[in-house]
Image (tube, rainbow, N blue to C red):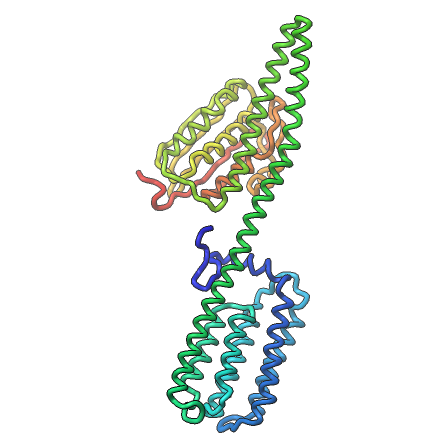
Length: 439
């Protein structure tokens, strides 16, 4: 798995990080509410039991208690506001940060108002730091800010002469610093583990979905050509036994066409599945884009000859950083579709040229065109069925879905200009960045 994490164990991609947090919301929201409420409640009790025994040189016990009550109130309001939320609230991080910041501010004020005379400051700070790093969910930025603020408070506001003595105080500063570093490291590692598990599960879900789509497609689409092959094979045997050679030859031709169709269909299924399985794995290399297009054209030449479709090429040759095999399959599917919908004695024009920061490949056909709904479905990758061709040809419905997958992997775009009266211009726009194109 690639290194997709930052220093704190969070995912580099904001979108994927947001998806991870959203996926954990319903599972963890009760824990979030409970931990923040308990921490704020115990913080309030600590004030009730401890602040009365302290000597305040500035401020007062009552003012500090107002802040502790406010903190506990925020935790209760937080629960009632978001307890029924089915999706992660947009501003939840600000609420979580506010409670951490306010509790830290109370400790800073307590230490300053008592002139650093509290013997319980260090254990209190250690409990808070442990809570921030190991118990309370939330952003690591606010946790680090609060931990550093508490360390500085103990370092500069605690009066060593009134508490532990200078030497012990310095050693405790070092111990507190070491504990914070270790806890921060542990939290980063723990957060990375959680996100790695999420990514692994997500990848497994992709594999399972691809498997399910493969099984469903194979089960549905292979039956028909196999039934034709079996039926015609039986007819061929009967015709040979009856010396009806012409009918036997006709059956054999139908078998050959069915096998050819089955082969193309299986090729579509496998290539489409591979495009899903290869997601996130870069197998591109620099090679001539013209060769890639021409390989695709060569593959469908026999199909074009059967319908007397002339494929006219006008392709600019440039070295381009791409997956040659997958783009060949992508181009082949587009041209094959164009042949399928083109009438007899027609032509398909394939143009490829550099325009500004992209390489544009256009496929002009003379077919019946597409509806706006079908064009939109193709762009969104949700076309689930194939229209009947000009001679009754049927496809798997997977070809253009494969095209969308492959083009997205190359960070490209699809543009389709079509009118239902006839003719479609299918354009692939492949971006050229530094290192992609060498003139």
